[in-house]
Image 1: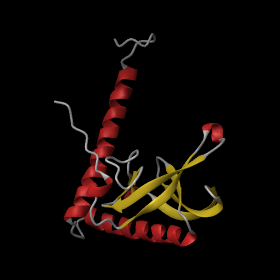
Image 2: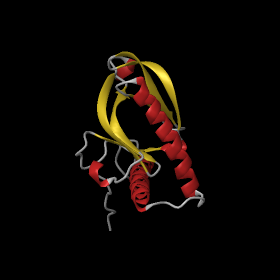
Image 3: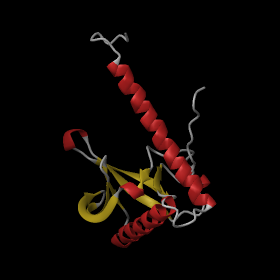
Image 4: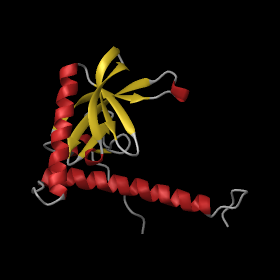
Length: 168
C-alpha cells in the first residue's frame, strides 16, 4: 500500500512560536546571479516551515529541523544590498535568510534558539509537548521520512541498474 504524503498548510500550523516574511537565498548556477525568494515562514514544533505565502496549501521544500542546526547572524549581500542575515547550518545543509530589518533578524534568531531548547527538552521527555507543537513535529518528521524513503529508492534503483541504465 502506498504511503500518503502529509503536507501541512500554512494555516494548519496553529499557535506557532514565530511567523513572518523572510527572504531565502537561492544560489545561482556556479555561484553567479544568486536570487532571494520571499517566503512566509512558520516556526513551530522544532521545525521551520517555508511557504510561498500565508495561504499556501503545502510547504516549499523540506522544513528545517531546528534541533539539528546552529543559527547565527551574518553580514551578507541581501536582496536590498548588504544586510544582516541569519544563517542556519546543519551537517547536511546551510541556508541563509534575510528579513526586512536587523531587529527582525535578531527576533528570528532568538525565537529559533528558544524553540530549539524547547524542542530538545520535549524530545527528551523533560517538557510536555502541546497538541499544536505535536502536529507540527509529526508533519516535519513525516516529510523528512518521505524524502529519505524517496532517496533510498533512487539509490537502490541506481545500484541495481546495468551500465546501460536498464534495471537488472
